[in-house]
Image 1: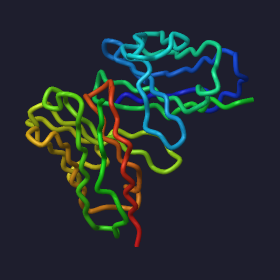
Image 2 (image 1 turned 135 degrees about the vertical axis):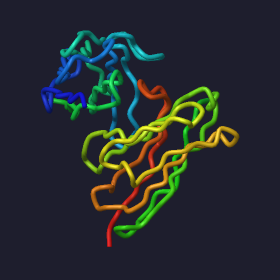
Image 3 (image 1 turned 90 degrees about the vertical axis):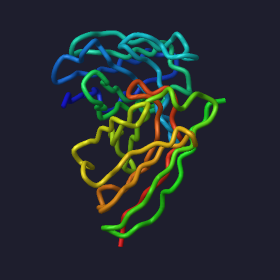
Length: 107
Length: 116
């Protein structure tokens, strides 16, 4: 099983700032099959990024993903009020596993 | 509009059973593998099970293997999860999701509570 470790656990930022979220895998993620999801309170997760860096349909370009192998990053430029939420990474290259999540909260 | 409608959750005693359903509409269900993901209250996401397009291949997390059974009826555009021998640690929201990763579409979730 590929274990995914997300950091930090909580990120306290102000609207307009940049958020940088990390997802580290215990072993290399095959083909960089790494996705990022956003989950707002009381809602189902929403796909943001897949293949480590490809934005899903309808996702604003302030969201970007990067990385390869074992180290991946989700960057959110110019935080909007609706971006304060939970974020999860997922690898789908070898079965499926999720990271523990990062909460982006308003400072 | 794509919709996945999860249902079948409820309060059940330890050792009991439930069958969860996920009714799909707005996309060609029979062309997608499907997945169940759960989330204990206040906790993170956990993959539970996936099924291939035809239903001939199924996959399970170790935590549910032997107790849960995933299935689908492509003629009814419906995904199922039969959950048996329920334990307190199975208490969670259960979401159906399209694909085997990444998951474009998600249901709204159905809550399973295991308690005496």
